Length: 378
Ligand SMILES: Cc1cc2nc3c(=O)[nH]c(=O)nc-3n(C[C@H](O)[C@H](O)[C@H](O)COP(=O)(O)O)c2cc1C
Image 1: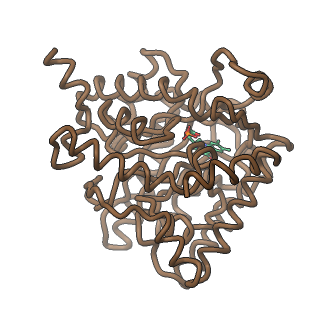
Image 2: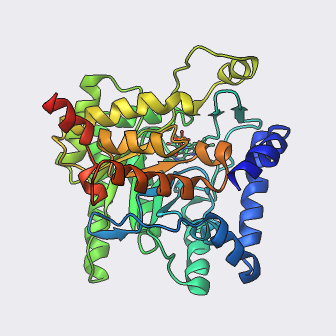
């Protein structure tokens, strides 16, 4: 199927506007996963035949590979992602208020470097409609069969100094539905959002969410939900240390590294040149190395004792392995699905099983941060 996608799917997608291609793909996924007759062959084709059990913040994951934020902003294809065999699904980013996002076109693709540039600007239905959508989904289908993560953003209309209440309102409204929440202070397409990575602002946001977390957990007689923070790959070393220390000190359960980059590599083709000239965040292959370097640094700062989720340019099992051995316990992708197709999960999970065997490791946990341990021995 990977070959079929490369021969037919990818050239077909290349002819389409990136956002339209994205919407069509989501609609197809929704359609095929809504019917048992098509769900069964989808599972047979795309679901990994192997598992790599991982414990993450007290929950069981069948393998470490999940869907990154931004792909399913409206939480409308949850069954589809389940059917494709993902280990976890991150929906959103969701903001307190519904918003249209930036003017179109706002997503650009370069096939030669397997990269996307986007300036979507948090187009999403807002926290109230998303809560309703999730309620309907849960009432009809029950909880998803894998952990559901929810990405929290800030509404464009909310002034920066009121960010904490914007994030915590969304968090409260969606609390019952999510298994893990990600505070996203790193999208480049909402004016000044990245300033919220500053320690004081970040602490306020985390504290507001933690307060709601405690209240809701005691109301529902259950544990608090894990809260992670997602960072940009533009932080310098001092800023990165501050963010990590602030997030850890304020009870964040881990970090997602990284969001898209505003930097640009040298273009290697006309299509690179066109896409890279657009304003927005770059994702895909050119982000791979940068995000892995961030994972390594965070692993060192946190002495390997704080969960890291690796995202950025994962296109195959080698990329996934690099992120895990750099220190990531779980990994995610967005662009990889655009360029490699629906078979990505299966190829990554099967490839990771091979890697574990090649290295004589019996669990994924033994591979997390392995490159640091090797460097220390060399
Ligand atoms: C079109 C698009 C929309 C995105 N929207 C979000 C978002 O709402 N929240 C977020 O935290 N990250 C968002 N991201 C970033 C991805 O989750 C991911 O961090 C980034 O794309 C790097 O991973 P990749 O190289 O696998 O795409 C978006 C990415 C793209 C391409």
